[in-house]
Amino acid sequence: MTADGTYALKKVLVQSDQHLELVQQEIRVSSQFSHPNLLPLLEHAIVAVKGVQDGSQNYEAYLLFPVHLEGTLHDITKTMLEKKEFFPTITVLQIFRQLCSGLKHMHSFDPPYAHNGVKPDNVLITQRKQSHLAILMDFESAGPARKTIRSQAEALQLQEWASEHCSSHYRAPELWECPSHADIDERTDIWSLGCTLYAMMYGKSPFDYELDESSGESLHSVIKNVQIKWPEEAGSTYPDSLRQFITWMLQPHPAVRPHIDDIIIHVDKLVMKYSN
Image (cartoon, rainbow, N blue to C red; front, side, top):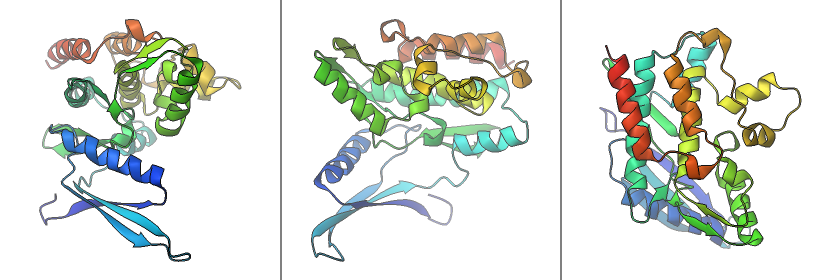
């Protein structure tokens, strides 16, 4: 809410039973979270309306949120990139630490929840004197993180779901090409978190940058091979420790990818190191 009492109202036109189920799930999931780095759902309503042409019954959903007028991390980094400006190392770490805190809240549920949509577009940024407040939003794709895959049919079903609900440039490899025997967990978010940290530093996901540099390779191929390049024009802006941190999160094999608690321990050490 702004000083004048303004809120953000999200209106969703629901035109199928499947869509209604997704909206209801978003409401259920959003209502469970209470954390300063997760956007709270303040109120909601689902209203039945008649179709204009055939008189069939459709629904409209209204979701009320606090408003943040300064925009998303994507908006800010895009503007900065156009001006050839970059966040200082300590600012990057402080924003990133808040995202970790919000995700830890979700991953700490029993069973854990995955956000499934971590990316700069879903991070609201508010300037507060000498610091930034970062808030993770959009829980449309959020749900129980752990999935047991035991057949090719289940693997294909997960891949199809991910292709519809998870942004391709921030999607973990196991959601692109799921084995027929796999245990998927909340570390899909860690991959997205690593891509988001890179985007915070360089203005685009690591795989956007690689696609710009490559000759005709597909996005899937670039992600599968975890080909990460570091922009030279900004290379001296950030220390190697941040690059190593990103590489650690972008482990192609989820079983060796760190958990959120590991990430927080490491980022706290980096904050301490670079805050002086």
